[in-house]
Each structure stands twice: as C-alpha cells, then as structure tokens.
Length: 211
Image (cartoon, rainbow, N blue to C red; front, side, top):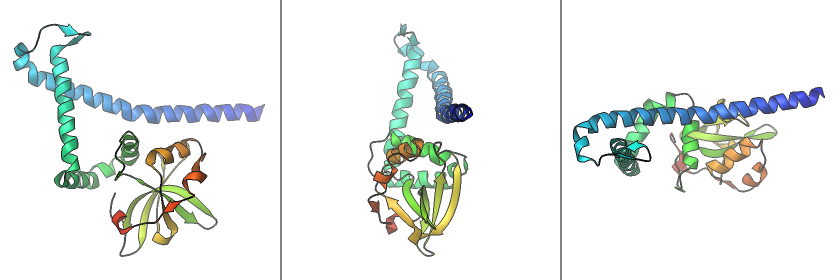
C-alpha cells in the first residue's frame, strides 16, 4: 500500500512539473503577444478612422488590424531568418544573449517540433557512450580541432533540466531521429528509444560549431 501511495505521489509530482514546464513558455509567449498587440493598437489609433466600425466576434477592428500586422511582421521575420544575413543575425543573437537565458535551448527544441522543416538546425539528438551504457542527449557544438563535443544530457521525463558534458567525439553518435521523436521517448521514460538508436547517424563536419 505504501508503495502504491509513493507511486501515485511521484506520478502526480511528475504531471505537475510537466504542466508547469509546458505552461511557462506558453504563458510567456501569450504575455509577450498581448503586450505587442497593445503597442500596435496604440500606433494604429491615428488611422483608426480608416477601419470599419463595429466589432467582429467581440473583437474591435483595430485589434484585428493589430493582429494582422503582427502576423505579417512575424512572417517577414521568418522569411528574413531563412536568408544568409538573417541566419547570421540569429546565430549572433543566440550566442551572445539567448543561449544565456535558462531553458532557452529546450524552448527552442519545443518550437522546432511544430516546424515542418526537415533540415532543422536546432538541437541534434545523440547517444553518448559511458563505460557500460549509453545516454541520450543533444549535441550543442563540436570542435574538430580538438575532437571534442559539448552535449546536453536532459532529464527524464522532464527534459528541461539536466547536465552538460564535454566528451571526445568518438564517444558521440548522431541519431537519425527528429526532436519530436526524441522528446517523446524521454517523456515516456525511454519507451521507443531502442527503435531510435538502431540506426545511428555518423557525425559530419557540417555539424561542427554552435548549433
């Protein structure tokens, strides 16, 4: 009976932690969007007389215009980020600022799960060999000169926390698996991991440097 109570408490704790980790980035994003929309509404007020009067589904025309403007701006940023100049700006910003924000890399990987881009440049799933076992992780960067690899080893079932290790490149194997597949295996305490690790992909020089 005590074992069952402890199991239920651990299960509830894990569910609570997962809920918090899922809610925090969503709440932060919702708060940021709300603030940006309010700013755009303020900027659009001088042109409010050009918009149709009334509300649609309880939303004022100026609010809808602000949302449309924000959507167009995000699409424009998305197009710019795919260019060489945009990629350089994003990479520099990530190295200097974003990489120092706690949890940024995992939030980035969560966002990547919603992308249909097959050539994702986010976290790369890998297997790291230790003594008599292998650990699932994400390659952060690789230095070809010293043949060393920086790897983030996330926890399970909650991958937001973990450890960072620097290991020789020979001990790291890239996995031919998506971030979504890897995260699902972690959330399910390793269920399906054996299928992901059957066909490891070799580390290539194109993977060197910060991801």
